[in-house]
Picture 1: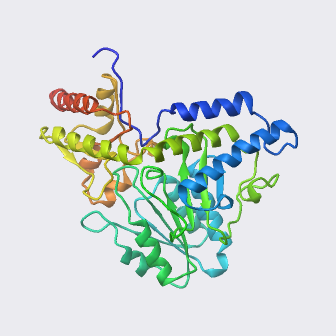
Picture 2: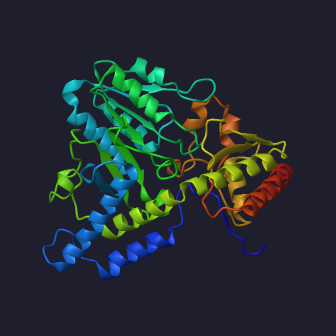
Length: 381
């Protein structure tokens, strides 16, 4: 169909929703003051900021004072890990994470290793899942922080974060537990009040808010060393003039998602079922996502067709998917390698990710073009 566009790369970024757009415009055009200013325009901006924090606190089951706005999840992850480790440095020099983390977490771990910290990386079991007992075993009296994601950004693997958190706290109650919640934020239920999570990162552009805004939860009593220094905004933890329009837009998008979470999840399950049914008709396709994965991210491989080639083939028909994490810029997937997949399967992987606007027709169109591509591109080899 001429001019048709099917966007199936929502794990990389999302289209800004109407509620977020309207909130951002309000903060830019009308209530545009600096939240630190003492006059009326500053007060108006501060009200928007306070409303966003209050709203997030309600959605997450935490206190407003435990929430900080950042530039995105990369900053939130850095602040949690590097700032958290420095804040707890007297407790030890050991950190625990997994082999499947986002690039921003992996880079923090490499930096800690360069500083002399011991980093323990836990891999998945044969079934592709993670066992909280492995985290329990990895933690000792010298461990200062454990970090793992909620949902893997390439495969959709769902981590048992609450069970992991309880296990590590049972072994060492002082250990900090950080969760990169980017791909599960507002799509899965989350209540922080009675959770074992001490630090949690989230990003606006993954949930239909603009790029450049993130959230960080720091449980009361947890000491974090700031990465930046300046005017003392946000209790000195994350200084710099607050981005009021984007913070307001982020909350508007989150509220919209939270309201429709069950409905969206049911849609994603239906879409995934249809996708698996349709690609099951293509002999060259193997599904890389395991049973313990969320329904809105599906990773698959098309035998003998390199990811980039298939990606651009689909693009000419207005279909947009990804060859893995957008942050990897086409590098080989460390996530699929951790699953033990062979190089050929990793080199031919595609990630398909849904939004509430994705339809059954979109899935059928994608499957049809994927099948055509697997046939025609093989003939060209």
